[in-house]
Image 1 (cartoon, rainbow, N blue to C red):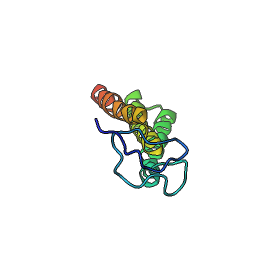
Image 2 (image 1 turned 180 degrees about the vertical axis):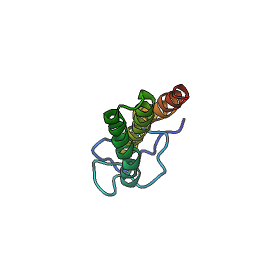
Image 3 (image 1 turned 90 degrees about the vertical axis):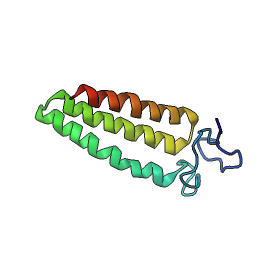
Length: 110
């Protein structure tokens, strides 16, 4: 498995260890976010599902609607963490959430 190049800029989270590091230049905008635009674009996968889950909870709707929104939220948070750090561990965490949580939840709520 090919690791991230060792000549990349080192930011707050250290050198990237992810096997995927091709989306954008690292730590260009600030030293805390490796891939700024990929990280911040995940807000669309975090805020709307959170608002919808809270709305569904307050309205007393079925738990399956809340779980569906929370699974999308988990995918957004996992992707946020990966693109922010570019750590291999966050890459695995992000993919694990995408495959196990979201797929399983959507199958269970049918």
